[in-house]
Length: 202
Image (cartoon, rainbow, N blue to C red):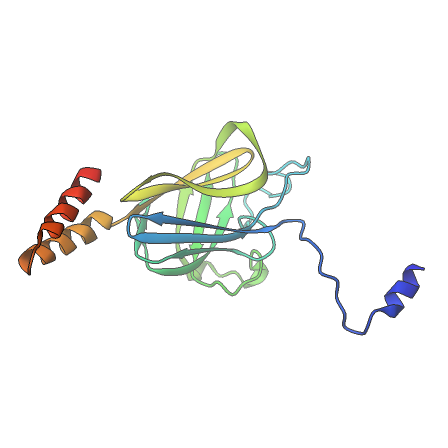
């Protein structure tokens, strides 16, 4: 019966089925900048994660399926490194006590890039310390927290493991330049109100 069903499908026909690791997008405004992360969310399913499913010392695509993409609408600073506006692939090299996180300029690789991955195409690498959490995260999760006008924490959580990557944006500099420019030209009551409001909220 199964073979009869297969034979009845037209040549080239495909059945659309759900992915084991569903696709997700997280978008976060940080001040006047917007950061977007496109990634897939694999589940633990009872497996040993880091040091098992994800071997220590080997490149990881930060999720599953295609490489994870990180897009920023403006220049950012991440642990002393400047990241220009644009889209990057996110990779990681997990270890037991420290991870290397990679912002990679070549976004054309599928997955972890395999042998095509070239470290010379890294924008930069940072080192972060993984933390053990009391809460359980079944599906890999990327989120943003501690959000202010000038920065946020990008968090990765899976199983009982969590890492946090601080992101800084130059919102204050951009806003102060805009305020000074408006005050030099033709300030109105609204100009003073908006300037005072921003400085108070900051």
